[in-house]
Length: 443
Ligand code: GDP
Ligand code: MG
Image (cartoon, rainbow, N blue to C red; front, side, top):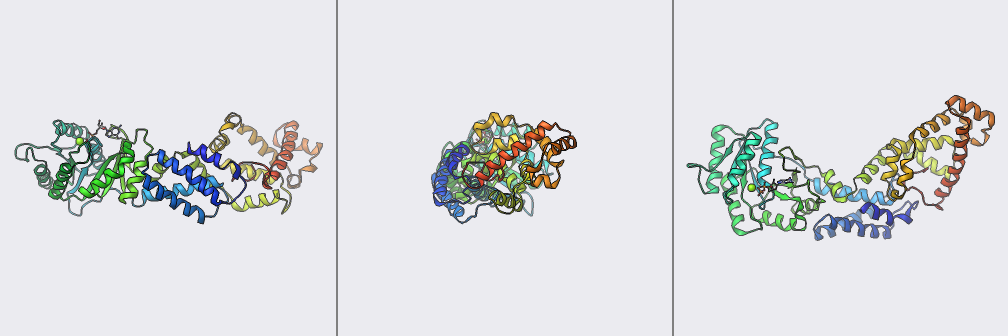
């Protein structure tokens, strides 16, 4: 995964604190590969990576993040901004009915979406009318009728007097019907073809002209991958659209199509469809999609938590002490650092999310949270002087501390010994001699 590869890229970067040009180049290569694997269009990838490099150069390393995390954050922010630059849902007409027209290739999921959208609108107090303007396939009208029945929504189908055999007539007549019967939203389902063709585009354009839709939604299968850009461009040119609906997100597509379409068309992605059931539907969430494209949900969660819980001042003090400035690093500092990491969540989880920590999974699973509670209790039972200068903790002090914290003397011994060892290791880490956990001061 990208996460593992970035971890490898940054193995020798720990403790450096700055992103160099070489780091940026190396990371950019990995990001590029991840985006191509997610099926993002090549031209879009190139442009995107260039933008990320530019930002990485001008961004200062956040104190709570290591270079890999910092670059992932930049990539993620950039993704969210492209995907969500203009997020919105349906814009309703001032004078009903609001007319929504669905366009897209055959099999994209238009008819299924028509039902989902109708149900969603109904839930918001609207009264939608579904319109069967796909007369291309023999079963299309029937399919929409079943969809409408399931959603509990009326379907305007071609019948004598409605414009039998002519989808443009049917669509046109449906508007008059909606006005007559006070449906406030009209959803026009149209025909698609397996590939882009002129006849299909012309028919869609004619339907558009007949119903003058408030919203034309381009419905596209997220699994379409590299073809997404061509298809989107063809529909943008042939029919024009106001928003995008991504379907089949329940599949294993990484969602590159979303980024390609959003970037190339500049149109908002409005809805996401993720299954055959009518409830498998939601407004589009740019952050979720960004995380899906990057395949780094865990890392992103960690970055967010690190930023949230990071106390820059405290960490700078601890780091200075470890570097031999501003007094000695004592048990109180140790406790603070431990608590800071702990705030991010269960330790086993926090460590599990760190890049490069995969090999340590077994040890991580053995981290005993209760033991850490006991360590906290022991440190709390010390006097401030003892915390600042643990060397003075002799036998009688140890006995008193054990009693005060409800632990055994052997546990106090153990902690004091381990503290001296840890401090030695952390001092080496702070002076850059040892690889440690980047961005985790004190660890
Ligand atoms: P249309 O030709 O654009 O009207 O596409 P349909 O609505 O008929 O859908 C084509 C096929 O895709 C049908 O078998 C649907 O059940 C299926 N489908 C539609 N949306 C989704 C989705 O979000 N997830 C999955 N797994 N299948 C979907
Ligand atoms: Mg259909």
